Image 1 (tube, rainbow, N blue to C red):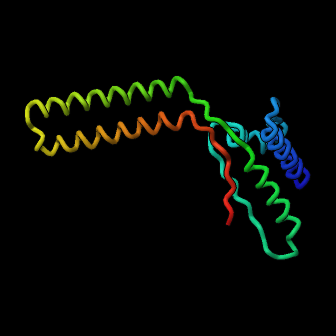
Image 2 (image 1 turned 45 degrees about the horizontal axis):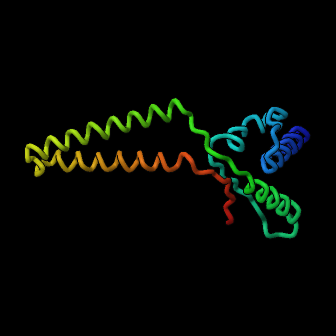
Image 3 (image 1 turned 45 degrees about the vertical axis):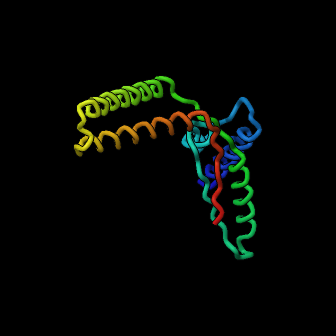
Amino acid sequence: EAITINSSLLVLGKCINNLINNNSHVPYFESKLTILLKNSFGGNCKTNCIINCHLSDRFSDETLHSLRFGERCSMISNTIKVNAKSFDLTMNNMNSIVSNLEKQINVLIVKKKTSLPCYSKLVQSYEMIKRKRDILLSTMTKPIKSSVINV
């Protein structure tokens, strides 16, 4: 069992090195561990790596290896690849909702019913959806960098 764990960690190290060096081939399918972590390291997500360290000299080698591993993990950089169908569908739905809310707000303004509680709720919903839509648009093009938390 220890041999299997060590070989999986060795393959994980290879994968991380290939991701850092932007190699075209990353050996994800060489171990079960890297198959499970494939989407976390090379996929469309942000991954945090938590490193356990001990101050005792007894564990200095393990601590040093853990810190080096964490440093290598922090060098991995992924760029989000938007699933075009779901993104387009989401944006179309949000634009449709914003448009409908604008129409409803304008109807209440024309009818001079802006003092009604429903008017303020419509305006709040409109602003919230619009803000979420803007955030979604702005985050789709930013590269994601893996991070290591220093404790």
